[in-house]
Image (tube, rainbow, N blue to C red; front, top):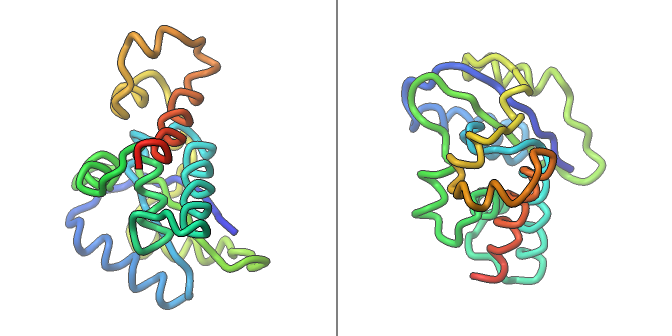
Length: 170
């Protein structure tokens, strides 16, 4: 089961930020992946990446060793982590962050747990950072000539297409 949410804040040190997430996930026996929300086009973007990652793992076609990193790979639309991490990873400084929590089936994540993580990381929950626009598409690497082929309502489909392409180029 997955829980997706957004947050905003200041990341002073990437290693410390990721270490805090890692310790927190071990404490609660959950898996957590964070993303630069500036290249996320809505919750469906992350859900699609999660579903592709789970399928790759179940079919033993995964590129990485963990669900979290496989999800990052698919979310980026890239087939190599050396490209996916700079594109989708959280950045130092003022940051909009997308999180996905992976829990065991039938385990409902408590809001208090999410609040504890946001407090630990000194970030403020804000799901609006997950909403994408044309700038999100450009940051993701989608070209103007691709963007002009669809209506604004279909922008998210351009990202989902890139995620699906990862399976083809793997």
